[in-house]
Length: 359
Image (cartoon, rainbow, N blue to C red; front, side, top):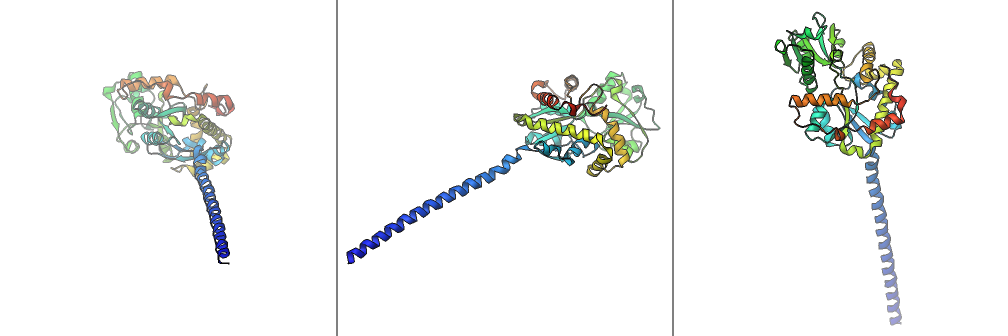
């Protein structure tokens, strides 16, 4: 009887061991499933974030970004499978540095600053123009004569430190045979206040920045456009990190959404002007914004052009100017610095979106 009892105990022990082993296996299996599920959950945000982008401006959010503002409000980026945030910047260098550090940033900066950064080795590639024509103009208060290039002679000319503006001023002086010795050129962070305070006679600034600031305070002023006197300067450009073009479809969708945003902006001022007014940094009246929107049509799409169009000829002229001034030491390889495939494909698939804005 004792032996039988011992055998029974041994049998029960064996069953307990087998049950324990099975339980361990089940536990390990469940743990493995939980780890796989956890890994999938961790990967999911990364995969969903592959189409998340930040558009980094080189300045404040202003009516010049109205197309992006309306595209965001109308869900045009989301409709194309993208998540986009619009962020103000502190200058060209800020926008370029953000893009160079992260391939999910898209930058907006002057063409001059872009070329300089590219020449210095920054991994940035331009794919579209924001304004096809530069918005830089010579601005003077209404009591100052400013009708032709010769009117600049003998005057104090000021502007905020800017590679774009200094390059344009030098080209304008050379093109129009203005006597440089008769000019007093001053770079100042407070150039607009200098104009209002009488410290300078002419301010060289952007129509969408300094020009808007003068209109907000109802200061009477006149302007002289370099474009009317032989200087057809390149406007600002959109650019991204080289790695971003491994998935060009997302960049194409981004550009198409902006083009459709501009079309929506101009199609219904009653709806979009109040929307823009609520979104910009420097508050303006609805009438002022509306007036500016009409003015900037010629910058977005000049006669014969399409929205976003990159003019390689203007880029080459700008590069020659930068080389002459020794701002850059070697020419940029445009085949690598500019991606025309994005525009080509966008124009092919959404032709109407890029031609609806009336000059």
